[in-house]
Length: 258
Image (cartoon, rainbow, N blue to C red; front, side, top):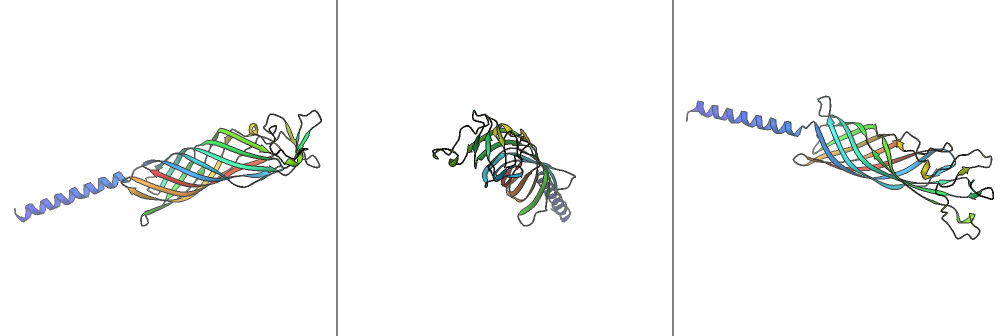
């Protein structure tokens, strides 16, 4: 075999190798990636108006599908969307007296009443996700957008101070369940409404979300993603005019893209 033939064979092998590498690279640079995520979250209700206050954090959870779509023919710009189920447990207390209007003796006062909500939503977040080029084994990303949500399920537990009962032994009042009508009445009667109960929760929720995180390749096209997300509600969670509250949460995001 002369040198000219060998040179041609080497050139063909080189071109074939470059073509294969380009094909593999094109396969890795997918325009759409889909995965599954799970996210424990810490939820609370920020009271904006009315005689109520937040009483600590609740531990919630989100899970569902996620997908990223490459935009602008740039590997750093992505439109991200999700279809997830999110629970946001929170607890609020009254710092005023709650009166029952449905009573033969003109009203029963409940002091230190507490309301533990566990609300479950279907969320459809839509965000712009910006990714860095690979740095070492990781890509870093940030995202910003909105998250429309629709109420799926609602649960409520109520309790009030034992001191409002003559015997002082009962700490849970089954009547505080939204079946009766209640008013908030301060010393000057400034707060009046139908109370903050399960049937006063709005069916839709809108929030702004911001997140940061990393992603890394596990094997082949499979990638692992992790990050933090703050979900800040725009809308009032309660329908009662006497109060205004926003249920927010901070989530730890864990996901796998396939």
